[in-house]
Length: 304
Ligand code: AMP
Image (tube, rainbow, N blue to C red):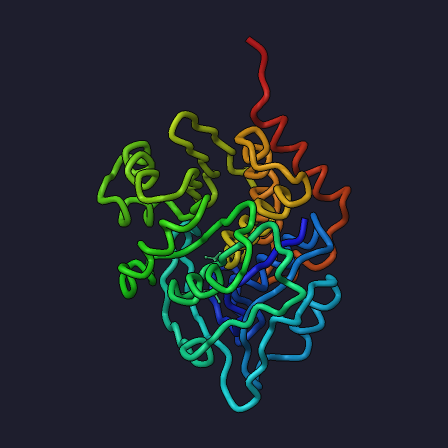
């Protein structure tokens, strides 16, 4: 049940109608590994940070017993920096700045103690690095899940298509699935993307939930109607962490388990948006998660 999570560990600045935060810890691997840590104590992080990454961010990771042998610290360099702005409709966000900084020359190291990994989460980052990680794990994991975003579709499409061919599950949002496939209908987009390599596709629709496609089946997780959404940053990564964390916990990759995994992923995403930055992922209990999953079940269960 050991799980490698690779992605960015970043400094983020964001603004929403509910407030703003400046240079706080974030990144796909920070949100994702925190979310996954609620499902397995075997989360192994692969990432790089600069000397400016705050001690409080590292403590957050260590408090969750995440293995950081694969986290490189480059004291002379700056951490990956991202800033974004949300509008009244929180499904829309503008990326204002993406500074790769230390990510630009990141050469991921897979420590020997990580080689027993059964589940691999390629969080959102440079596709070339995602490929290197797959190549550096000696025995192919049971399941490789990959997340990405439009930034890499615009700048690194060729490498992105190569890594997509190598994975079992791809998670992207609805607009990105349209961009990647050239199809507007999500059903058509899914059909096309499932010819590009992955066996399963998850299309995230922000507050409207998520869809899971295989070639034969479709499953839908609803969006939880939350009254307060403060900051959607990291929701997709928390979703990914909950999704693969649940699969690692159950040690099963059947479609039936993947369906439950997207509900657990959605539950983790829903916690994430309730506060600025990764704060709301810090002190959850198993009871909190079980209660949230129950809300998802009652939203979708009905008798005929
Ligand atoms: P999400 O809201 O789940 O899409 O993820 C937001 C997080 O992704 C932020 O904490 C950012 O630091 C990180 N991020 C933003 N752009 C990128 C990118 N191009 N590659 C990797 N991580 C990114």
